Image (cartoon, rainbow, N blue to C red; front, side, top):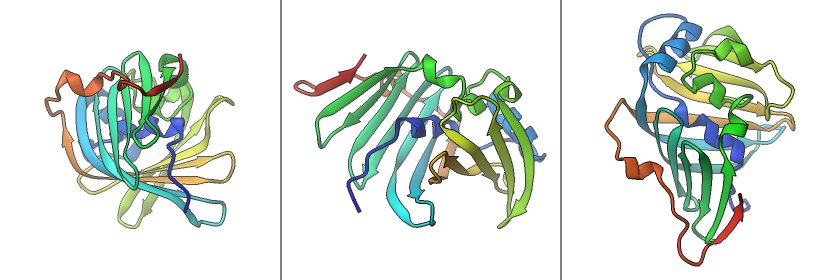
Length: 208
């Protein structure tokens, strides 16, 4: 297996967190958008090819704080860090000592982040559909209305405690990304410093 490198699209999944109320998956998603201001969770991430073979895997801790601030700390198999400070997206590869920086706002409109961005306009950019119960989880399908999305479809699964525990993202190349969340904390107090990033001395900085 080659060295894991994070797709810039995957950071949009950081807002997946526990929901409230016993309702359908669509209603749970809308409740989450309006009720969750911050969160922290452990995650595992797996990428599969067209044949279902695992080609990448990773794990770590994610945090977010509305509006638009997040931090994904990849701990295994390689140390990497993603930070969103509300204006820019930073990706730091510790091993390469390389930083990639991009504007955040340009990517939000047609990405999975639009599902959970907090503007309560989910159905403006996505077609939402209940997908029934599977493996004891209640599933929701989100299909982007625009043609510029990186994903053809997104599935989200909720457990009996109304927590979002799985996100499945299918891209245009037939790859599937599975994100599983555990030990979720809803609305914790998170230090502002967690959502700030300064490139380390000597690091190569690519982008804007």
